[in-house]
Length: 213
Image 1: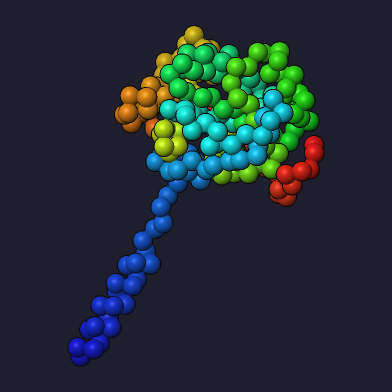
Image 2: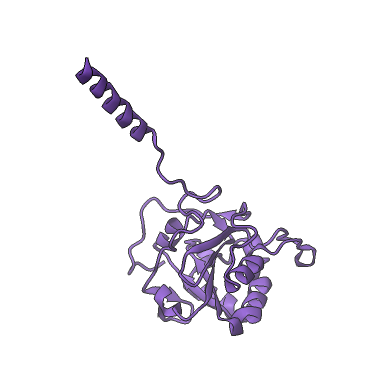
């Protein structure tokens, strides 16, 4: 009888362990949760023609990652705001990094470079045709932002602010709020919000690093 009870107890314990759910990703992000270590990157082409890595930004106190592109009107509506963000926080050790994973004909490296010159971008702009970074960061739309703290852990992810159409009507500037919190060594008031933008089209077959568009 004792052996049966012991068996049943062991079976029950094993069943409970099997019911334990794995760690969940964020509410609006299928890959990352707040507090996760940000996926690293290396040898990613910038519009400056150079290869870039996340470790190159080791001196930054915070990194703002924004997935964006040329062809999305919601993404382009934020260009001036991203420029202002970089300008306002550059001297405080914050680096804004825009990343395009789009394979649209409107988002070739040459057209990204032309747009950057025309709009006088002052932030780092990378192109990842493999789309690996978009997948690793759980990017679903453009624009979609993440704020990484000094340890490169995700402190915030989601929308840049709460009004993409009218910069003057913004009530909560989520990214700015998160950056200020990170610089102060505090958790942001808002850690995750629903992102709004143009859906990113992911290819079924990943592009090889040396494959040109």
